[in-house]
Length: 314
Image 1 (cartoon, helix red, strand yellow):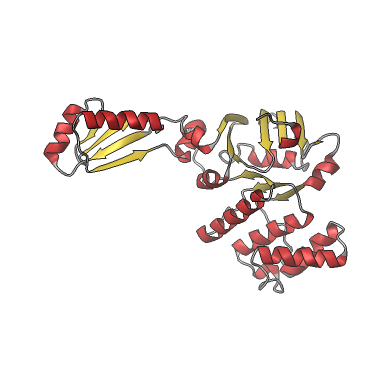
Image 2 (cartoon, one colour):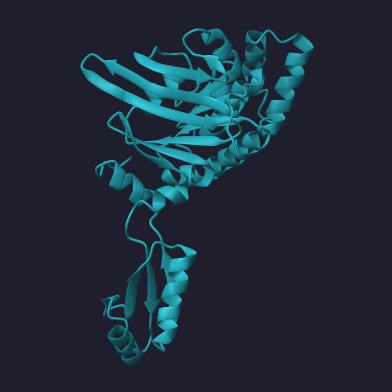
């Protein structure tokens, strides 16, 4: 299917940014289709937040052709701002007023009529399970509630594109999963999400397309499955309970790597259906009956550490 300009929510060609003699973004290219989740991964200091700030008009790029929501970032930044919402690592919530008052303040900033503003605020508070806490000061909210309120405030203006800069950092597992559900719901309605995260499982769960940023350059990009196939280490593991059966199998399958302590054999595999079928045919032809067969494929942690020179994320 041919992709048209209308299908692209965000595009960047040759995006560059430096602070003094430190290059933060060294000419990166990004394309984010409408109605998808795009995730930018990278170690701390890789330039993820700088990319978000530039694409959301908060910082000016040194070079690059940039379009967001169909608008040229340089020529029409106001139109870009009207099309986007941004939720950063640090909440924009005013803790001295209630959750409802935060929402109504945002409605006023978007120049919504009073009655419509109240209706939108009530709907979003309900959507984010904050109705019960709406009359309480936002300073009393838990971390998860504050993140939900922050995102609800972002949605008051009905943005078509949302930038989420590490939205679940510091949240407990339940709050993170709740936030994932909200993001999926947004995308199902046609919203485009540009997500930066330090949690690899988050990108694996949510992202349609992932780019790994390292030292100001895109080290690799693709779907989670495509990225995992870039990294060696996939294998099929055959485990046995009887030592003599294990020894016979090890003799028959000479290309397998033996693990005598675990009574297991490891056969390299990229995990494709064709490879797995070939391995099973080989094992069956050798007359081997394993007690347990498991398929191991590299995960995004393996991809991350391989592509970012071993830098570990927090």
